[in-house]
Amino acid sequence: MGALRQQFLLGMSHAACTVNVVTTDGVAGRHGVTVSAMVSVSADTPRPTLLVCIHHLSPVADALLQNGAFCVNVLREDQAHISDTFAGRSGAHGLEKFDCAEWTTQLTGAPRVRDALVAFDCRVTGSDRIGSHFVVLGSVEDIFVAGAGAPLIYANRAYGVPQRFHPRPVPEPGMSAPTESLALGCFQTFAPYIVPALIARLTKLHPKIALSLTEADQAHLIAALRRNEIELALLYDFDLGDDIRAEHLADLIPYVLLPEGHPLADSASLSLEGLASEPLVLLDLDPSRNYFLSLFRDRGLEPRVAYRTGSLEMVRGLVGHGLGYSLLATKPANNMSYDGRALVARPLSSPVKNSRLVIATLRGRPLSAMAQEFIAHCRALLNGVVHAHANP
Image (cartoon, rainbow, N blue to C red):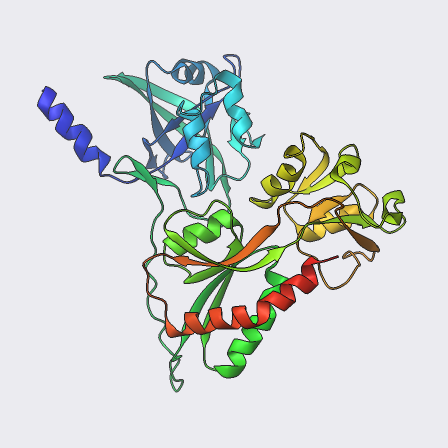
């Protein structure tokens, strides 16, 4: 049986599974654990039913049964750090594990990762100890679906992402198929300021091009490159793996955004030391978040974060209403927020590390002729465009 068990474990390691964090809260406290054993049982019971398997030595098993409720958080491709934390790989213990993500709740009160790919909020309807694990049945009370993103999967004892296969489009009757195509990705904050001019140039030269554009954050763009969903991406030169080839296009120079009339706006330039005690409206996107915070921390400072948002225009709107200042690297051509508030930009008084805009491709994958032409347009056009937007 020992040999058969080992063969079973080896065989199951090749079965790809979604990565899930099962959480619970209630009389037995707040707990969570990473599991791969989560499956649908039936959609035709009075409420849909699923099951999870949790090792009997995990404190989560006993707490979950006492609380009578749990949430299955199906993680996104860029949330492996959450899995590692609840699998015990980060060194965090107890409630510290929940610091790795933002949480909310649904009907049962079990914690839900705010931006999970999918979450199933369940009440316990039954359990059974089989070997080393409790098999727990749950009736699904509520469901959250993000509507975008790809699942984090686990196979061959490693994380991965699914690869999609895109069939060639069939042209409408009487229409010729596009002779050229390009799948492009761009980081969502600076996409509106640099991509339209590049696409306009390309489509003028190639009117029949089939071009698709993905605007997303850094992690999603890198994952899309690896899944062959896009051929190239304009993004920041941060946390790129060895399998990503990046060509530097331009430096983005950080600046301070203030509302018109702010006392600090009278200064020709501003220091991070002088800003640290002021309320900061933080662009809460990776890698922007860590980059801007690192400018302070490199000087031994800790900024006072008043608001966080993943929207560049929301940042500008909050600043426009006098709710704080912001550090940004992308500067729109106008100095007004969406709702008409006047804004001013001031440079930092001390030199800081600039963020670098790169065009990224998957190393080892031959580039199409259209991708090579687009990169040439980037080299020719992007430097001037980016610096015009980046400098205050």
